[in-house]
Length: 315
Image (cartoon, rainbow, N blue to C red; front, side, top):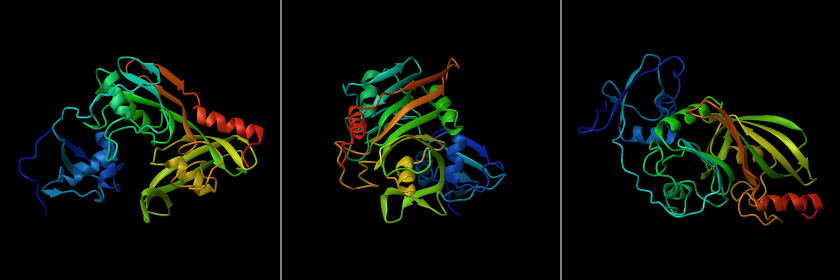
């Protein structure tokens, strides 16, 4: 048996596991119950902050119905990401949320190698308040986009809005659609890709489709236009796994144009990163209950690709 470290500070949450969470890994089930990200829950577990009786739980512990688990949340910390005067393409803003069109090449939040110039740094300069649920590095961030994916994102200005938006994403009532340019001529007009996704065993910076021990990933797609060697496709996420669209399209045999991780082939088009754009976002406003839908226009680099495809200029 392992025991809680003395002096563990913070608010305690007492959880009782139901049949719905039974069989799930602790990092997955507890993250859902606490309405935090899985990575945040993993850090809490690594710090010994989740206990069943006197036993400290590990991330891979399989939850059982009736388990009584106490999670000690860390004390709130002041934000330490610094405000920076970086221009933002704001689509919508009020006292609760801000919807932005993220540029390709912009990192969402500070991390190793990118401590400045991020969307969070820009938001901290522009907004007086941001939710603190994701801590000192990711204030206000409800969902993410890869660095080289452009398009629409929503951020929360307070904890109530953050919790509401997180629940909508988990319940799949917040809907997102993406436009992508892929290599090859997709044979079917539409379809659904349903797999398990996990870290690539050979490259921890990549994700991969696996047969077991992965997380469910579901993407619906429909062809917008065909160009022989390339296809413009619209993707709708039912789940939000890391690199999901990039992995799924590569798995189908139609990798994204310009993708440096999953299709590192020379491309005839001028684009830095994958040709993937978060086009629309639909959600229920956390305060008013109004159903809202916003669209981010295609960035110039993808517009130029599509123009060249229409002209047949891709050889």
